[in-house]
Amino acid sequence: MSKSKVSNIILAKDIKHFDRWSPPEVEGFTINADQIDSEKQPVSSRNVNTAVTAQDVEEIRKAAHLEGLEKGKAEGISQALKEQQEITDKLNNLLTQCHEKTSHFDQQVCEQLVDMCISISKQIIRRELSIEPDQIMAVIRESINSLPSSSEKIIIKLHPDDALLVKETYHLDGEQDRAWKIFEDPNMQRGGCIVSSETSLINADLDNRIATIVSQLLGGERSDD
Image 1 (cartoon, rainbow, N blue to C red):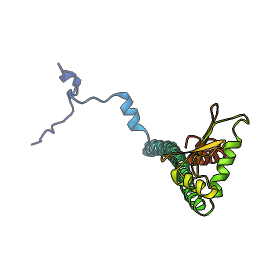
Image 2: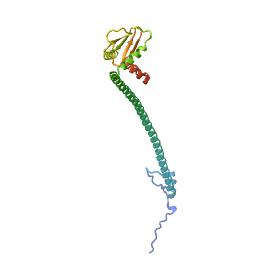
Image 3: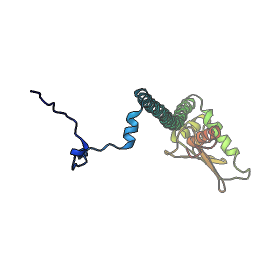
Image 4: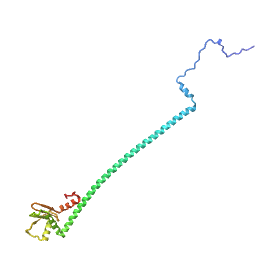
């Protein structure tokens, strides 16, 4: 008894109808041609491109850093110059104020020295009058000589102590017939006199004489003293 073998071959005569097979569609995932071409590049080529890009980024970062340093340096120099100018202006103002204050101080010291000299001069004159009565007579003669030569009725105004000193020294007692007369004035300072006539007046009181001398020394700045 023989057994027949079953064949896997399908004969054309046995095929009566068939459908074309297509692969199933997968939604949500798409591959385009550019991506396929990119994937076809060698691995070494992709690494080179990535390395160049990183180098560019590093160079940009360094350039930005250097630019920031230069900008910061320029701003720092500008700020330093501005602060230096402010300090210079303050120093100039301070020096100006010091000069003004020093000048004012010098003026005050000068005036105080002048006042002190005037006071000392008055004390010396008073002392000299008590020792040398001729001092007041010298002032009187100088004042009389300053009057016009035709002056008459001359009156000499003196401090009472000076008037007494002159009278005692030159024995001028009582009303004598002379070209001039002595008039005592308590408001007069010792060491000076005022000589007047009908037409003229010579003010030789102590303050006026000293003020004249000081005015000549200081250029007229204290002519009213």
